[in-house]
Length: 134
Length: 312
Image (spheres, chains in turn green, yellow):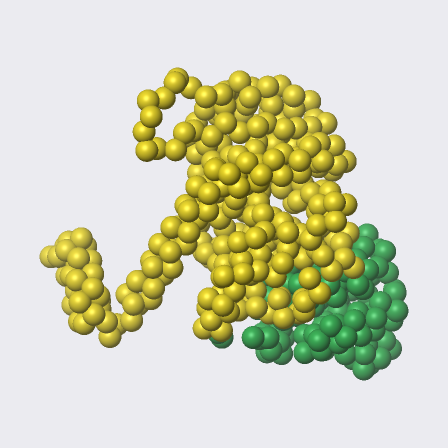
């Protein structure tokens, strides 16, 4: 089933209302041939995990600009692991200080994409690192 | 109804990808499916299908029933990618295990659904959900496929989207069991509903024929964003379901059964067509058709003969 599209959840957990970046990325990944589930603003970690489970996605991309990533992201990765989705690739985009990148990796994040990352680079990373969960 | 939601989600993925595992599962599940009420929700882009589905979920849960949603959005004909955005309006039920929402990309299938949507709905039916809502891609006038996939077809209209002539054109409105004018708080909603009611009346007394009588859909007005009219919509769905148990729905189920068998037959034929060992579409045949030495009808007939004889 190598030629089926990768399925990606793009979610905005937390309370910041800035979803332009998430929408641009969702659209860009669509153009790169991904099936992108976009769930909108103000998601709780539970909403993100439920959507990832029901949609059976290969990748969860989190967009956070509020500064709450150290609280939200580990909670989401734990909920994913508890739901049997430990093998789903988790990436984070937004405003993430350099010092937080290593702790996020330790919490199960595969990559952190800061401002200026191209959509092509994100797409390439996902293609190379996501495992088709058949 | 406890069930393993992760296993359900993975089976739906297998169904979408048409794996052998999925087909084996569908064969086994078929005898236990057929109990859920399958409701198709269709209408133009932006008419409020997802918002109405979200409002219906709330209503159905308040009645203590389990509900699943299959929401289809279009795949890009160019890249194969898709943006599946129907969940945006349905996020309030994350912790409710009696609500299951699944997005599907249409993957090149025209008609408003993905080719595997009926099978996905059957899986959710077999999983024990009382109601399965099938939300189509935004449709125009002729994407009527959902009517064959659902027991009850709801066609959404937005206010002021067209005049009475739009309402008497053939197509989508003909397959509606219920017509819903959504965005009922907008100006013109009641007038649109009145025009639809006036135009969707039965025509002349019919000479009895084998053809099914034209449907006489009930016309309702909802404001999905506030929930106005949604209890009445659920009541109308239940009425249609109850009536269907007696007569109408039997026809729908037979139509669906025939459509399913034909669709699978067509798929299998298409697969064998792709198999060059069975019916080789040779380079010389392609050349002949391209150069107008052979017409494509004759070429196709030759291949069909080869397939039906089971040899090249």
